[in-house]
Image (cartoon, rainbow, N blue to C red; front, side, top):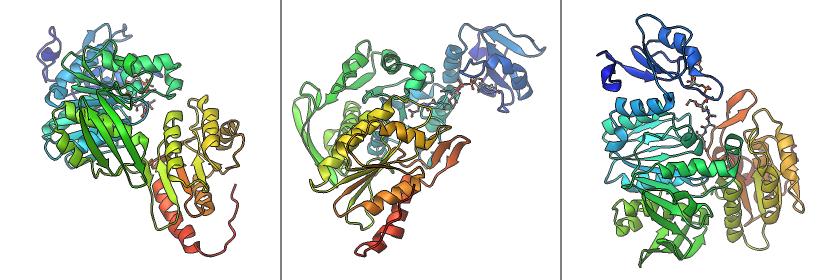
Length: 492
Ligand SMILES: CC(=O)N[C@H]1[C@@H](OP(=O)(O)OP(=O)(O)OC[C@H]2O[C@@H](n3ccc(=O)[nH]c3=O)[C@H](O)[C@@H]2O)O[C@H](CO)[C@@H](O)[C@@H]1O[C@H](C)C(=O)N[C@@H](C)C(=O)N[C@H](CCC(=O)O)C(=O)O
């Protein structure tokens, strides 16, 4: 792209790439001096030039100006980066039907359901915390919502690969850091708001405002889809110019869930769509997924997909690994792995576990709380498990540089009546829970979902993953012992 297409006063020079990280080698690039939380990009102009920058966008006076390099001083580098990234990558989001999903819980499930239902008729990509997928391409993301340059570049790749639509998980941190500011959205979905990222946002109000900005920035042609069962649902869209569509259990919702049945192997419910009722059957389990599926149905239907087709396609959806995943290897009790790591997410899983566990049987939970993040929630997590569970095994969950045992002890402050164990090693904790289970009990393994890493003091370390561990332990230690008398080893 020519530099004078980006800056009116610039000479006609070819720019091959745009860059905001001086550590990356990018020949003939335009470097943006972004002020971050740790560094100020203005410090790295010289490194950027050595790595190929021929032009620099900055907002502060620089200590040194090199001959032959072009400098553009602007008021706000990130705003300028947004405009230029959009232009540089051919305004890709305008060529895709864009669905953005925000909220504490449910983003990934909703984004993936929309992608799966649309895909057979309209090639659809997905950008999310677990993966970036389009066509046959599958990439591993660094962030839930990629940074500005990566995001526009991926959207362009999707357009070039023939995608017609894209779903994107929009994190509050991403909105706050203006990562989606120049992405054009057609449908924006709000799920719910619960304690999360308060280490970053400080207060619930700031967290709410970050999410709300996503809806404030929509244009009048867009559609803002909101869950009005959530106390923040209506406030979220009150200043949006977009057309507002509501969903929830509430009778006032435009898409209102009427009767529903939560079963071990699926869910059935009646959805009132404006004034018409539709019966929906799905293999997804739990009330949590019922809400996620409804949000996805609203977006799909509002985008023009017929309800009859939606009814057909949601009957058997792909089970997302580690998301309300029932694992059955032939054992005579329930095992459910879920990523729930917020108080709200946890309460929904516990409610579901209660609904599928016979009265005289137990709920055994393996859970923890992440290190260096939102410490206030730890005791609440303990308290909630105390209300619903019969046995609690506290273990590590991305402890970072905190001690897993100390985190567990803080969770335990919220436990009053339920017996609990602290087993720091997650594999051992899962094994203990599975070995303790009696017929028809429910074992919950929560917090990590399908994540194959553990954040420790030395950084991100590889981890087998809860789903794999559960399957392995069941086969190796539990199933062979069923029917036999054996003593189990208490592991601390
Ligand atoms: C707290 C946070 O969000 N940090 C993000 C932020 O980093 P930062 O502000 O610390 O940036 P910085 O390191 O100070 O650097 C400032 C600028 O100088 C540049 N730089 C820096 C060093 C250098 O040698 N040369 C150089 O050019 C950097 O490229 C950057 O442009 O900007 C970086 C570039 O975009 C992000 O990679 C980084 O995400 C970090 C890795 C992160 O973990 N973020 C998490 C909290 C996050 O964003 N999470 C959300 C939500 C997750 C969820 O709920 O699912 C997400 O969307 O993933």
